[in-house]
Each structure stands twice: as structure tokens, then as C-alpha cells.
Image (cartoon, rainbow, N blue to C red; front, side, top):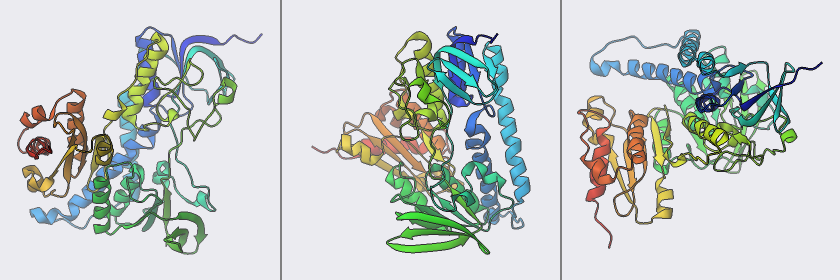
Length: 465
């Protein structure tokens, strides 16, 4: 006799940041919860994404600092990367972060069942079947499956390395091509360039970091060029990869001409579709569109008791978005609530050289809404701390409405750019107006002092009649 499936109030597919936040919140609200995870706990960001990338960025930073230590009177030998030791350090930090998060223990303490018996697939809109054959039913199901790298559909794409497998490279490549100049691609450009590789970056977009404010894109691209990176934006397309005696030949089209070059490694950072294949969504009456699951403002799919959260819905593929969405979706599932998340207040950036970050509207977006919006840009060369640290490259751009009250956006390039933008985000979330921000006293000497400088600059801008 077949055992009847156990029924839960909420089933969560995936134990990344979205799934973990959703499961814990649902349990906190009194629901019976099960988490179904086919891989490692923690999701892509902890295991193969943000955390290892940040460790590599730290290593790259140490290399750059060592090369310029003589400016401060510190005489050190030229640094050399030990790739095997670097990889080992990355894995050590990943393991450390994972141990701190304690997902399995937190689930157990919250009374949440954790089942790790392979991929979960829909048998119908309330039933999930695992690879082991176990069946689970739930009144609400939250799809929090995360995403994965995408390979271009071109000949030889299997020869490329995707970002989450960069650490599998057997040695540090001397020549690297990075296809895709979004957040991930840009960070890998900095990492390998700092490590001493000759780096080429290619993108069909007209500029790198396309979603960012154009001033951010321009500044980071200029820095890349000054560091010897070969930047190709607005290319017509990538045609093929082929193994040759001299490495991997990458062929592309640019300005109507055929181009090719040889590299030791080619990294494809060309998109991040949701990991929705083989979920049996058709059995639940759900259609995948453009590699993600359509959901409304409350994360409900076309089936009201099934929610798509985080990368699964294809909106803001960021950890901070996933956590917010997970908690909101759990409340909507358990309480029948209609909670949204403030997606316009999601700070994001990258650990490039220099760092960059942004939150809220770009200048172009702001001018579409308010043509007379006020923009103030303060160079880091005006910030004492940046001068002290020899980190004068960069700026903070602060955008306010025409009344000089509401902060619409903030964008920064330079040392501690992400931390600076995070501080502005806090002010925006609290509804702080420009005048109040201008009067905040910042510790001296700090990079965050640039925020007050920018706010005061906005107040001094002449008004248009």
C-alpha cells in the first residue's frame, strides 16, 4: 500500500536566500513548512556566486595594494598569485560563511522539515514528487529555485567557462576573454586583470554595466582601459569558439567585420535564467516565459497558491531582493496578505577597480519623470579620506526632485562605493529629505562624508523659474 504524502501548509522549493527567508517567515507565522533542496544549502550566491567572487575580489585587492606599497615606503617583492592556494582560500571562506548561516539547524529549530532527496517536480498544482519517489502536498507552494549561468547557443560554447566554474580552471590563464559586461562579467574582468592576466571584455550592449547610470558605466570602462583591459562594446555578436594549438579561438563580429583572437580561457557571463527547467510546471498549469515564471506584484503565479520568488520570477536577481521577496511571499501565502517589496530601494554594485554602486533612479530615468530634477556630482578628490588613502578616483552622484526634497537616486564609483550608496539607501528608506541629509554630521575622515557634500551641493544649485 502506497504511503499517503505528508501535507504541509507551505512547501518551499529551494534553500537559497529566498527559500530560507520564506520558510523561516512562514514558520514564524505558525504554518507547517517543508523545504525541498536538491543541492547545497545557501543557494548559488553563497556556494558559487557572490561569496567566492568577493573572496577573489579581496585577493585581487591585495595584489593591487602590494604592487603600490612602495608609495607608502613599504618595500615588498613583486606579488605572484598561487592559483591553487587562492582556490583553497575561496573554498575555505565559502565553507565558513555556510557554517555561520546554519540553515539546517535554523530550519530544525523553527520546526521546519528539510528534505534533500533530489529535484522536486510538480505532479499537479498541490503535489510535488522528489527524485527519491517521495510525494509532498501543500496548500501553498513557493518556488525559490534560483538561477544558473547561460551559455550562448553558438558552436564551441562548451569550451567556455561559466562564472560559477571559474575556480575549476586548472591554472591562472594568461589570456582571458569575458563575454558579457554586466555585474558578474565586470567583476571577473577586475579579478583576472589584477591577477596579471591579459583581459578582453566583449558585449553586444552599447556600454558595460548597461543597467547602471551611464556615468557609472563610463567611469568603470575608462578605468578598465587605463588598466590595459581591451574593451569591446556594441559588437554585432559572438560567432564561435574553437580549440586550437594556441588555446581557444574566439570569433565575433564588430562594426560589420569578422574578428577573432586566441585566449587561454573564455568566460561566458551572458545571462542568468531562472532554474525552472524540469520542474514539471506544465503539470501545475504554469508557463515559463523568457526563462522565468511570470508573477504578479504579490509574487503569485497564474495559480494563486503557487508563488514565484527571487530569481524564479526574473525581476531583480539579487540576494537582497530574494530575501525581501521570500518574506513577503510567505506572508501572502500564510496570511492571505497583499505585501509587496520596495524594489526601487535595492542597492546594488560590484567589487571592481574602482568599486561602483547605485540605488533608485538613474539620471536618465529621473529626467523622464522630472525633467528639472536636480543632480549633484561630487568627486572623491574633494573628500579628505580619499586623498589620505590615495583613492581620489571616483564620485558620488545624488539625484533629487525639482523641489530639492526627495532623493530619487544615488550612484557612486570609487573606494567604498557600495557602503556609501548603502548609507543613502537607508536615508531614502527612512524618507529623509535633502535638507536633513545635508545637516547630518559624518565622522571625520570618512568616505561617507561625500553624502553630506552632495546634499549640500543640491541645495546650492540655482532654481529654475
